[in-house]
Length: 360
Image (cartoon, rainbow, N blue to C red; front, side, top):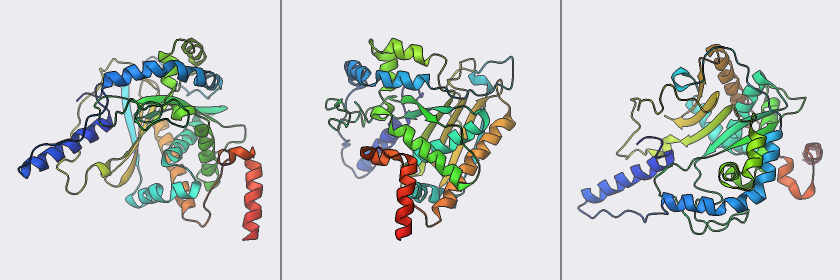
């Protein structure tokens, strides 16, 4: 199935159903699959229905984020276009042991989710090269949760999604939004644990301010009538040049008794060679064969391989610094967003933690 009509979640649903049906038939039974969920058409109609309300609540936020100045990536090669045919890849891999610590220990030790940790490593690497007052990274999600997708009742933002659940619906529901990570004048990037922790904190604070998990961005910019023009104008010239997508742990999709496994062969090109690439850098992370893998896709018409290799290495240095930090006794890093009711700043939190540490 072409990626135009299916996302990664669809594959998990289809493969699970294939295996379930095979096992039922093998036992001589009838094929009985779980109930269907809302159609793709109903999901699309629901988006349009909710666009106005989402835009009213989130329009000002997204317009403001678009105005934040972020560092632009240097162009190193002239004369070529950023097209699919010029795409090249640089991959870096953590060992199985490092991967286990990254997934299990690092989130606990830094008080952040695994995606926040990964985004921090990518943002730190990009900033080490491009600089600027902020780093803008477009994040991708599967788009089935949040404001309208999962059919779990009303969410914290109050939009409601009672009438639309797409957990088992085949299709492409991807939701993307630009995360703006403000840096400030004293930022630093190195393999030192302290610098790595600061980047995690920046990402946590940036994500804490995003309404509705970011899934409303597409509605505000492309669907709503009232706020779309304002956000579109603000976003012109401020689009993210870097995208990041964490695909999760593929190993969990294929158990020891699974009938299927990932094929080693290439599925071929998903887009025409002269198609424009969506970003200058496209970073994809996943866990396969018990190892964490990060793929950096770039255009050889725009950037040098040696530059992207340095970025990939810097990203891994930050991750390894966080892995090393998680093996120390120091855990539980806190951010102002953890104590929003008290209006504490980072210095206030550091002072309080220091007092507690002295008491111990």
